[in-house]
Length: 258
Image (cartoon, rainbow, N blue to C red):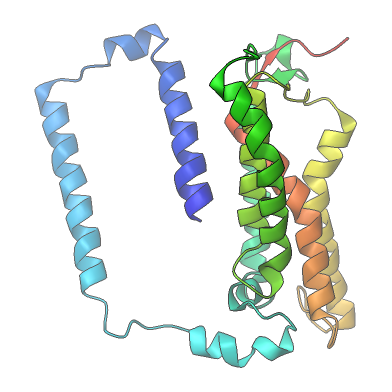
């Protein structure tokens, strides 16, 4: 949640602000009047105060379902209670989250001009072979790939999982792209579209199979919960890596390959 909600959203907002500054309307509205700024400050302080009061008003200890989740952990076969909650007890939420992230990417792509549809997302970054960014883009990705895959793999039993691992892998890919050592793939590529939908489709297929094998949608047959959870995470991993990276890359801006 921190990586996607804070890091990814922050990068998207900064990118959006940078694009808006180039427009004439944004230039005119860059410095709002005193009244607007005062109202914005009052609103920000009010929201901050309300959140602070809400947090401070929580009972001690705060209400939690953690004991119930831990008590039922053995039925899932996984050792990480967070993974059990995300892919067993509240798997519908995780499925919807994966679909929503993919829909967000489609929304970004829809902003592409007609001439660039099917083309390359974002600008082509020039490469500086002797620059510090190119140096980091060669040094960090091998380490980041190992760390990302490790965090993904241990997620069934230890803190980690697909979202954390995918965020690290996406960041390494974006670093290479920003350094100009690689380019984003055209969105018309068949392999790209297949990988983007594979994760949610596998999740949905296993979920509906549960209605036959376990008596309920998104339920797992006894003794097969952990293998199926790992299968879902493996299928979602490339989907999340591509989606997160392409969200930051933005809408297609360059002509598709002929």
